[in-house]
Image (cartoon, rainbow, N blue to C red; front, side):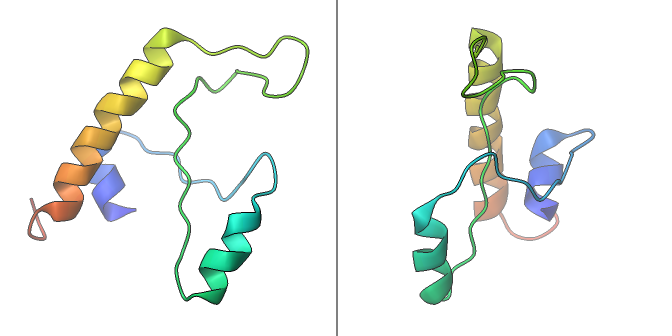
Length: 79
């Protein structure tokens, strides 16, 4: 979460939620790993309903965020 906050550079919403079920979560948990999901879509995408949508801007912003996040995760603490 700290690395994600640094990567975001501004407000970060941390909300424990998942719109669906993922069988891999149990497998990862059993193996001792933690799962963090980072959606790369707009907040109002209405997944799995008649007016499901995604904006190109949200996907582009998400990809840019992931690049910054990976940089922060690989950097020494405090950077």
